[in-house]
Structure formats: C-alpha cells, structure tokens
Amino acid sequence: MAKTAFEFYLPPELNASHPPERRGIRRDHVRMMVMDRKTGAVSHDRFFHLVNYIQAGDIIVLNNSRTVPAILKAISRKVNSHQGEPVEVRLAKRKSEDTWEVLIVAEDIIPGDTLEFSPLLSAIVIRESNTSPLMEIRFSLKGTKLLNAIYSLGEPVRYEYINYAWDLDYYQTVFASQPGSVEMPSAGRAFSWELLFKLQRKGVKLGFIQLHTGLSYLLDDKWEQSPTENYEEYHIEPATMDLILKTKAAGGRVIAVGTTAVRALEAAVVNVSLSGWTNLYINSDYSLKIADGIITGFHEPKASHLDMLSAFVSPHHLFAAYEQAIQNRYLWHEFGDINMIL
Image (cartoon, rainbow, N blue to C red; front, side, top):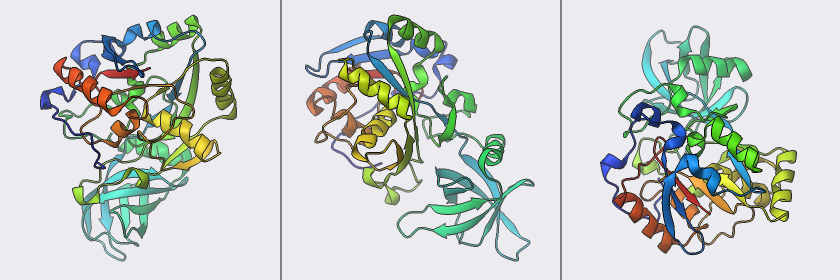
C-alpha cells in the first residue's frame, strides 16, 4: 500500500470476512453511511434505501469489469529439464490477448522458464522487471480460450482477513460482464438487479464503463507501489460518455460507483481518450472534472483510496466520519458496508 496521511486504528473485528449473504442478509441490505460533501454531515441507513438519495435525472456510473480467478497453481521447469517445482502464480495485469504481468511466488524463476498449469495450458516467462517482482509471461492460449482456462483453473485473490475460501461468485457484481479485474471492483457488489430497476423507474440513468483492477499487494512490503506506479486499463463507450456529459450539462449529478469508476471517468478527461491505461492519482489537490459523488466501501488505514475520497470531501470531515463508522461498527473491505459521499 502507498503511504498516505490517513492513519487510524481499525479494530480487527471490523474486517468483513464473510459475504453478507453468508451473514444472513441480502447483498443490498448492507449498512450505508451517507456524507454531505459540503458540510461533512453524516447519516446512517441501509443500502437498499439508495433510491431515496438519488434524484431523477442523475446518472449512476458502474464498473462492469468481471473478476477473474487470478491465483493459479503451476509446475515451473527450467529449459531442457525434466524436473519441476510447484509454484503459485498470481495474475497482476493483462497486457495482450496472451500476455500477462504476474507475481510468481517462488525463487530463481527467470526468463525462458516454463510454467505448466494443466495438460492444456502452459506459459513461458518472457521478461522480468528491475523495479518490481512482477514478471511477464506468454500463455499457450489466447483470448476467450485463455480466459476459459483461467476460469476453470484459478481461484480468486483473498487477503488475510478472509478466513474461508469463498467461491468466485461471491467476488462478482451482479452486472459484471467484461472479464479482466484481478480484484473485485467491490463498491458495486451491494447492488441487486431489483435496486437497479427501482433506480431506473425513478428516472435515474445507468452508465456502464470498465476499469480492470490490478494486483494491489505484491506480498512483500519492500515492493509497495505508489499510486502513480499503478497503471490500469480502462474503456468507456462513446455513447456512454455522451450520456454522462449530457446528464451533467442538464444539471444532473454523476455518481460514480467505486474509486475505479472515478479513476476511469477522470482519466478519460485527463488523457483526452475514452480507452487506454491510466496511472491517475487523485487526492485533495485534484479538481474533479466529472464525478459529483461516489458510492464506495470503507478503506483501510493508509490506503491511497482515502486520498481520492479527500477530493470529494475535506480530510477533516472524512476522518470524523470514519471515526463515526468505527464507533457504529461498520464493516470494512469487499464484503463490508457502503459509504456514499454526495
């Protein structure tokens, strides 16, 4: 994690280790803390009451990137060697139809080594980095065939606060359709189709964009990535951006679901391009061009996501609200509760 000024104590029991559905509630019934951007005023509700806060004419922008099961098991082999060693391979970033940056949890892996995932899938290590532990590998399959193989062999990325091997379905939003994220764009997880339909019936528009998340933790604190070192791929359809801009011009609010959606929207303006790669770092010094509000989860101490939230509301108000969230026992991370700033 990048070091930021946002440090606070998070009691371990507030790390959500179980999906809401396994805690006995629907995904859209998680708790929601609502913040006023101007005053910092805080109120408390449930997420399925979201329709009471969004106005007809607003647009909600959702990231429909689909989570891939990014942890793969393989046998690594040296050139001309019949012996192999079991290794774990963590997908980090898709570079092309058959090439990924990966974290190989093993020593002495060098370019030219082969990784055997199954009788039908292998890869060759083609490049290593001087500035990170990531390596680039080229798979024996590409495109849809490669994705199908990854989905049949892999497991989702889980961090230390997750104490059970939950199925991949728990790491998907209901509207996810474009495979590519190594970690779930989790702010959208709380949405149900029923809630989306309620919003539409009220006159709220929906816009779907993509930003494929990369691997955020490289298993060794000496390899902490700064926000500007984190490049992620995004794409916005021209018709979707046109709808977003027309909404804003007509006085409607653009409400981004998740830091990923904010990053994609703002990158499209900064890069003057609706598709590409972005390392955009948004903090309190950044003047938001498109996003008027954000629906997000609760972020851990020192996370750069908190810097982004300070572009929506002052750090003072944000700290005060997070203190309230801790006092009120909100739950953190991808299976936790929701924070909306409007």
